[in-house]
Image (cartoon, rainbow, N blue to C red; front, side, top):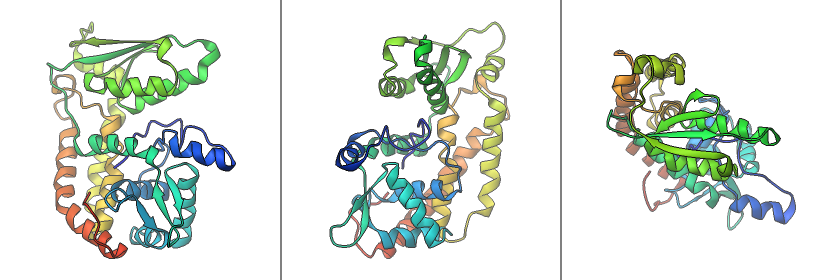
Length: 300
């Protein structure tokens, strides 16, 4: 399900009006909305669409989408407003063949697939893994690009060594390159592959300077505290579980244990997510199939 969250705050890379604008929304990269608060209507709808629209064949009727939103506790009028906003941001396209409904924008598939890998296959580094260093010097005339670059590097879990030097796990290098290409920032940037950093102090102290570990700890503990209050119904519980979790695999880079305090809560969060996800996925999917009244070609 999707969350390449690194947006410049929402939706598509540019929109237009009329036919030309519609064509652009079909092809421009669609990014997740990093400002959508987990549990909000916008976030729950994005999670619902990200998890289920692809296994449903990429299309869903408006009535079925509103019904599923209702099963998440979202009133119909509020759901319709939220769906309209997602269409404006390019995640959904109107589909009027037969019944009124929506189809997934093909330009969103890459974002959703990257989100699947992050959310369901969270990686934890070892001391033997490589790092990616990102050094850039963006001119003042392009300061908006500089701001977006820093924001999006932070979103994918990069740490800030200095204002123009960032560090992230080596396996995220391809995502860094995608960000640079998306922002046309490649000419101002140099990437380095590196082994273990050698700070003047301890690795634990360095990690606490480069990443906001206190904030990350708080996010993990908040996620764990939310689990006992998940709904009893599997569909609502599963969507809310993923919605509450999907931010953490981005903001938490999965640092090696040697760089983290001994009581770091990240492993427990992942284990709890994996356990509950395995238990809830199948019955939640059966609920979606029942609501949409069709034999879908695949499961999430």
